[in-house]
Amino acid sequence: MSNATARVEMAEIAPSQRALFLEMANQYFSELNPAFVPADDWKAQYFEIIRANPAYFLRWITSDGERAGFILFGVEDHKFLPRKTGVINEVYVAPQFRRQGVARECVLQAIAELWSLGSSKIQIELVGENAGGAAFWRTLQFQKVSERLVLTKERR
Image 1 (cartoon, rainbow, N blue to C red):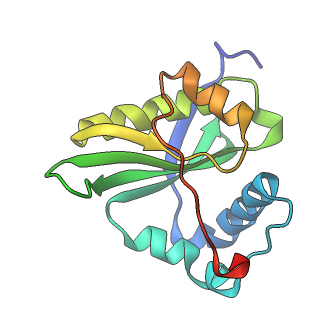
Image 2 (cartoon, rainbow, N blue to C red; image 1 turned 135 degrees about the horizontal axis):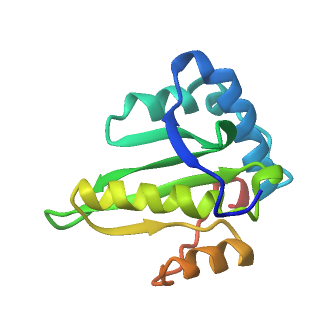
């Protein structure tokens, strides 16, 4: 399938599709971190907490009508100013749909929606040393502006 012919759309993930979403999300997080094992709170509440927040949008990505992945994005209050920050938290495209422009088209649609919601900027966060992800986001004009370091209880 060529980039020019694929029709990429987003559709809300319904409560009845919880199991399908969690299965795909598990695949996504396992690709990011092969040691990923869903914790009990993740299994029990991840989907519900996302859906309960009206400032976030959890959507299927479809390519020519086939489920190709999912995207999670939304708007947050700026930490210190009276502004809104758009965030793209997760973008997952299943392997058979990669390198066809699906992620790019979906992200462009999400960016347009975030601008329309009054975001003053849009940010993403990359996990680990994701060189491919960083290159993708740079093609969309995102720039590295900080580095986040995290200390977890397991590493104290």
